[in-house]
Image 1 (cartoon, one colour):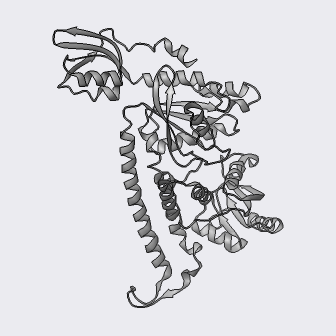
Image 2: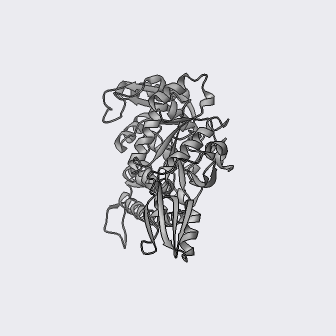
Image 3: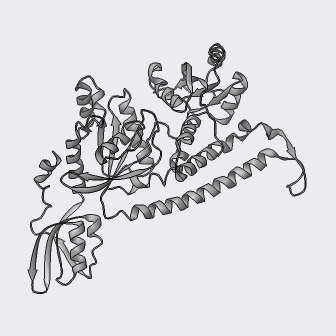
Length: 439
């Protein structure tokens, strides 16, 4: 797989153009520096400019381009990384002026994903996103494009190498899309086989501590790093939820501000776990100064993939890194239903277990199921998927009073049983043993 633009071991100068409404210069490039380091680059300089709108030709103003030229010469930089998305023309003009490789934010994220992808599925997704990014930039990426081709079997004299390359890239993009559709269908079948369990999916900004939380709750040994995008592949483990029983807990790829749209689309199969989950745990890093912006960015990605209406709990992680409770209280003032925890120390996990149990219980129905006493299959089904509260036998019929998830209730054949709301009305409260078990 051809890399879009590697920056591993290179000395990089970071550039940010702060448009109206953006953060201040002191904070603007902090995340970009983390991304550059995650890609293996060494940050040797930074430059910011505030503008009402980007320059059409070079994004930066002419004076700043000259200042940047002097800086890269002084620090002996190997490449320049923008915290903005550049057009192919802007990148080409900057490289011509600065005589150095220029990458934008999207290209840097794609480089990190290319380095971190381990599974077949993730590698397919990254290659597709890279090629879709590269297609309008072929003139910049390959130096042989000015050559002409002639000969038998070609369209005719003078066909440019660029056109040949573009056709090859477009064919590969179509092939990758078909392969990923096959992967998505297989993933949908895999997720469907887990219908016997309630499912919870960890989502949120990259490096918020999702994998650490997965390890703590399930006893898994998933690799964790204090780095952006350390997880690209979905991992699912069984979580023995106190006072409830086993649920399936999945870790997913982290989100980030400005995550490329085609990259989200490429990772559709990877995000299938979150799409099918009964509950989302949105994990945020309370210790990050930009936590509010990160929460907002994660919500935007969830909306983009159609998950904004799904039940979710905001989990404010890394409270052990805060010097006092002031910041926690401030966050809870903004998000009153959030659950503060530390995935490193275990603080707040009891409250998180209670919140998850209560939220999952909202999908339960308190019903009476009446069916023939000889229907052992349905009796076994209720025993496996419902909380059976009582049984009443009447001649050849049995009435089972139970609390059952809506998704399991819908699978009971109307020809086999009569289902009606329990005569006492609303669903029972959580068993009082929940608190004792969770502790």
